Length: 431
Ligand SMILES: Cc1ncc(COP(=O)(O)O)c(C=O)c1O
Image (tube, rainbow, N blue to C red):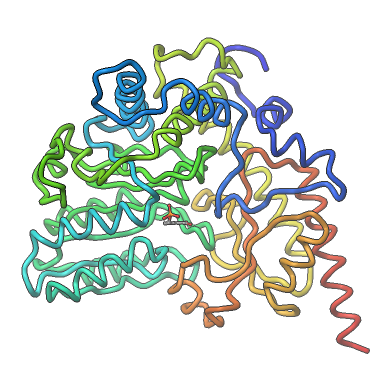
């Protein structure tokens, strides 16, 4: 890959960074990962950073000796980098086990500031990680949770949001993208409406961050949560909380625990330091992608935010080409029906939920799995999306999730195998 700002994605360079993709190419049958919304593969740098941390720096924080100091520096560095990643003050960054656990913690803290009768709005597009914590907290504290419905194209219905906002609304919890059907929501408009009503804008970026740059300022968010394991890092959760909010919320802490930086207040117990080392390496990978593959030149300097922006530009361009090709191909296959935004819409990430008309989603996923093609089936915890579509919650949808490391050849093979499996099922039905 040439140095400088790339204009297109160099798939060979990308795939060479990922050991699992190198192995997949020589496997028989060849393995194709189209399961990105469930978690992506990781580049070599992530594996190496985790190993190096465990070998050279494995320690708890705040100690008087070298590995512990290195651990403190690693976490400080991860906060700075994560701040650049979300375009927000690093002091607001909190790491945790995963998005869901962090959100339960944060929501409980918000709950302690609310009064009976206060209202929370959630949406029918959201993963339960940004719904169930609100429902449970509301039950404990006598709050009202109201759900904002969806448009025909499975976007958050802004008219319904306007109708449901009131002077009792304290939080609007919504996703930046759907993990089930790929809709990219109108986050800025939602956040502005929330603020106009005096409510917090609480964004779930888990399904968005692998495809689009999260920028808390331009999106107007007060809180954003994401999961580095969905964007090429290890299993880890991350949140950014507006620092003044992070300092003022009554976080649940053990008594001697430090209170600064403010995001740290939501980190209960010892973190997975090795995962944090892997997270830094995942961001290095993205920054390298945005600077023409120049991994060696990264270090801690340079304009990381600019590199990350450049990375997301090439990611988005590459993925929208693949999404268009997938959409066009699926349209010619009988037995599956994509739902939501059109395949070539700018208002979607390349995550496709398909209604299966001929075979149960699990059976279809198994047939694809047998051919080395990894896709997901079920409700993906997007309970209300599946219910809104009138589908059985256990069966759900077939989900094809593209990441930037996928190729046109992989999409072609998926379409070929999917068509053959469904035609075979149809001819068996006829007999
Ligand atoms: C949109 C969305 N939100 C939240 C979550 C929960 O993330 P985690 O597994 O980090 O708890 C997921 C997981 O798939 C998701 O896709």
